[in-house]
Image 1 (cartoon, rainbow, N blue to C red):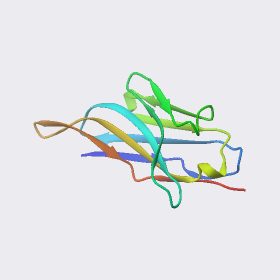
Image 2: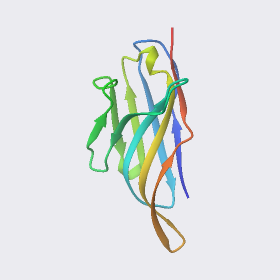
Image 3: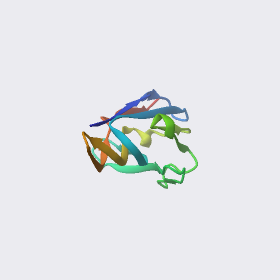
Image 4: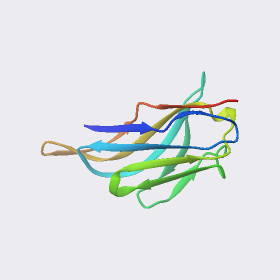
Amino acid sequence: QVQLVESGGGLVQPGGSLNISCAASGSILSINGMGWFRQPPGKERELVAVITSGGSTNYADSVKGRFTISRDNAKNTVYLQMNSLKPEDTAVYYCHADGSYYSGIFGYTGASWGQGTQVTVSA
């Protein structure tokens, strides 16, 4: 069993900044990619940013230059620093991780999602 717990969401004014984090815990052998997705009200879930265990990153065009993803492999934690926030960044932000886990003597690979954290950008 692997759990992803997000924290740091909230209400921020346009132009402001917010940092959200996600910690993975449980029966983890290794975590490969970690990332953030978001689901704006009434819309589909979309990719925000991803980062590999080696530190390579990829961002959605809409957040390039404003958001920075980083991770602490020792803590199995991924961060998303969000600057110059806009009202259209309002969404539930979900953490995602894929990796190798174990259950008893068995190992398996899989992907996990966090429960989501609300980010609201409004004056």
